Image 1 (cartoon, rainbow, N blue to C red):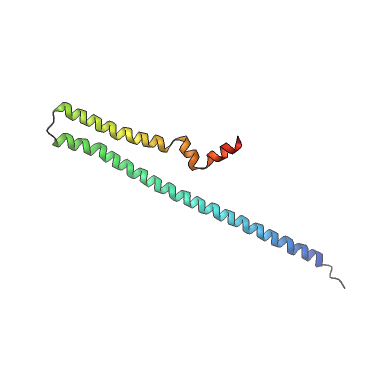
Image 2: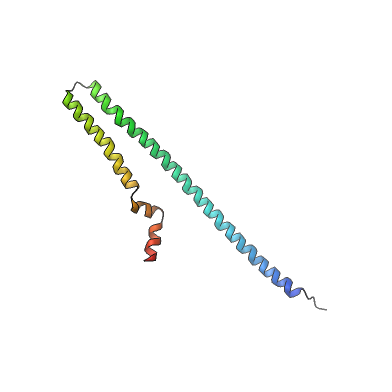
Length: 122
């Protein structure tokens, strides 16, 4: 006597293992995506803290160095003005150039790997 449920049980067994394998693959891809998200979040937090640190250092340098030079050096008023203006320009131009380089579109496209995606579409 042949078991009538044999073909149905075999199909269920085969499809069940394929479904479980695909579910495990999806879980693995989600875990990899989550780890990449955590890695990128950590990098962004480090970059943000370094940016804040740089801004604080630049602001202290912008204020303290020219003030101390102008107060403690025996210069004339004209020389003190030139030194103050040159330091102010130096401490504002260098961070502006650094920010322009850091936030350039080309750098963002290459760091986010979107450049490859755009080039593949063409």
